[in-house]
Length: 478
Ligand code: BG6
Image (cartoon, rainbow, N blue to C red; front, side, top):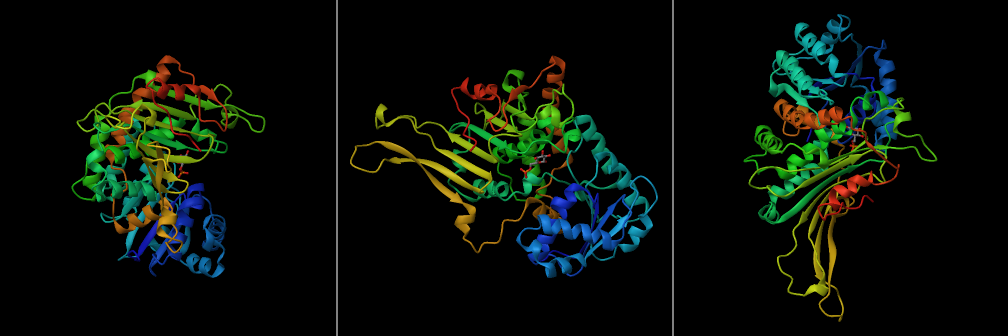
């Protein structure tokens, strides 16, 4: 279904995110027929170039990142007709009047801030003072949304001077991932799971976001951030919220975000013995973290594992284990709900112990697996075996199902539709920082040094110990 007509201005339109994600994502929505005739995309940045030169860079981005249709020249041409460029000085006067001249009345106006957070204030102020934005316009802001509670509050305050909260779309692209939304469908669209979704039946929950990429090429940002700020404070905490929240009364922005916020506020402070930091080393073929960030003494973490508790009626007593890192064995992101043992085995000790695990895979092979225990087939008596009820979405929905849209595609379309459900509210972001800040401050205070780990491994040994101590085990990263 096509969305309404729009003018989307991308500040930072020549940057990496625009090139890899935003522009190719818009192209794919165009190919899917979701972009109406009167949709315009205007790149805005510091470089001086004309429409034609910008279209050339967009054409390249589409060829490289636009998926199967990226090679279709006719489609690309048709898309590029909607694309323009304006040279704008975010902190000066240049380009603003001219940009304003390009905007039309009667369509949705959205402004995407794909720039450093230090420019948010200047952009927001100029959008208003030059009369480009009004009370109906939308602004989209990227992470990192600050680097701690104080800076996030300042950013929220700056944006609030010019825009109402209902106009601000804070992106966490994990919320746009197909499986993440499916998590809500599974929890709240079925009778089967929700009655068991609590500390009485769930032994623990594991959330893993393992990556194989290094930080090469973005070391100067990453080294000031680390895995805690880059991944845990946003992506992993959002997953935690969706898995742990109470059922919202409606699937609408504030109902969902209120429930997520309650989860964050119910998180206990984390004891420093329950956190493990790691940093990848060099191996025979490639340099290690410190070379990638060009600081041979860096103590920033490229890996974090931690155990936390949510102190509320539903979850008291059920630990949540979170881990994420770069340069690990494989790219695997999943949430695993590990249920408790059956209270009594009627099959005797030789049947062994068996646990149901619901594993929700974010990537790759988005889908879900429910481990169930059945009788081992054959005449050998009552021996039990665990088998997966496997549902890979691509398989279940068949080859004709539309290609799963990338998270950015979906989220940008939600901006045009005016649906904030999958965007973070200001108070949520602040609450998340309020939880992670003391962990980071503790590292600094104690002069904590991350544990080294080998590239291609599962992270540092201590992360395994975090679970072993509790008689539990991480699921394999494979
Ligand atoms: C970004 C982080 O937000 O998410 C990156 O800054 C990380 O460090 C990326 O690599 C992971 O996203 P995805 O969609 O590839 O899992």
